[in-house]
Length: 360
Image (cartoon, rainbow, N blue to C red; front, side, top):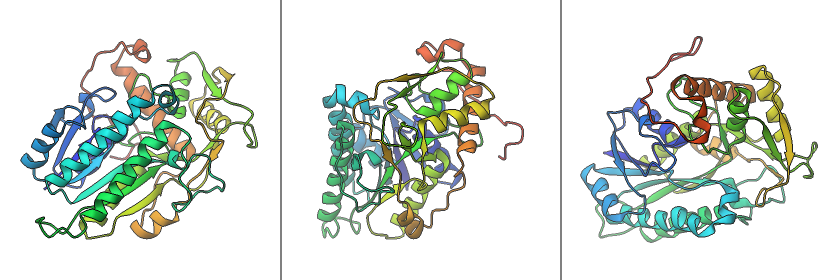
């Protein structure tokens, strides 16, 4: 058996690959390298460069490697970009997911874990928001993910007891991410995209002199300090949730939809002040207009994932998340030119580092 990880050369996907390898899994990665990096995936992992909507390629990979589970990360993820170019998001996030689901069914893959988003909730009426809250996206990004959730639910229902299949059916776990941040505590993976828009990464780059300033998009939201509030989850805790979801499905567990967040949030200003304190650098910050598609406050109701999967976060601390993000940026700085934030750096293989005081 093997696990196919789409988008496995990206931020979360590459960390997932390490988590699976640590557990003794056989892993296959599919990534088009539009935002991911080949060096982010260990050399001993079978790596295919391609599109997650290429059904011929998908079928070959699923059959040749006896894949029994798919973990689907590959997607476009920037909310304002989805407003400007919705068709790109519906192609990459929805149409490609449909092709992947169909290939999985045809190849009798039993388990599917989907990287969804809190954006499916839109601007929730109540916070924290639990999984039973209405799904009312306010961006094409949120809609593109919700459409895939619906496809998975319908497909699981249609194939739950298929007498013509060699297995007992098709089941899935949908994980709705809140704001993912930080990096692998062992220094093996982190957010490396030159055009990343994640607040903690942008602030960390600014603290280290790679950007001139941090912009705060919107300062008049109905929150205590006027800036958006988000639930920030450490990437290691997130991939641990995927590993638990895989175990649940392989044990015959029912299909699930679960939030992945800590259940409390921080404002943009609070995050920036934390980065300044941890980095020891009082960098420039400027106010900017609010972006379309950004809700004022969204925080996870996370009791369901704790109860069903027995998920126990290890890094629920904003300073720790920031410290790991800063360490990853410092690692990148030792291997790439300072101009890398402009996207002008070459891919150079990374050796797994050992930072002082970090547990392996």
